[in-house]
Amino acid sequence: MSNARPQSSALAELAAELRAAGGLLAGAVVADDGPSEHGRLVAKHAPERAFVIEAIREGYLLHYGEGRVVRPQDPDLALLAGDRLYALGLARLAALGDVEAVAILGDLISASARAHAEGDPARADAAWRTATDALGAR
Image: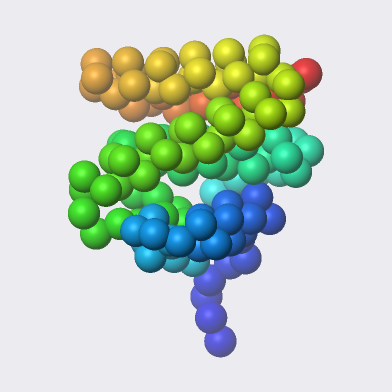
């Protein structure tokens, strides 16, 4: 019997899309180890928006920690994978035509980077909650 909890559908979709794309990133896709506080915040969003948020969150985690579904062995590949996931999420959101949401998430990426550069990851966590709430209110 496995102790693994099921992935959110957005994370499972992200993992499947990355595997299907092939390449180095596909080889770094692993099973998610279950729901998190962030996952509960995302669950209230429509599926296409949840995918976007999870892709950008995964990019963030690869920049500042460890991914949930992407775990490259090489730290340089992790950083590049994070950039790729930021771009994937923002491109998908732009294709939906939601320019305001692109701005919210672009600002979130910037605020998170600034918070980590200043040694304040708690401020980055707060920025995530604020951005996720702002997207939910739209």
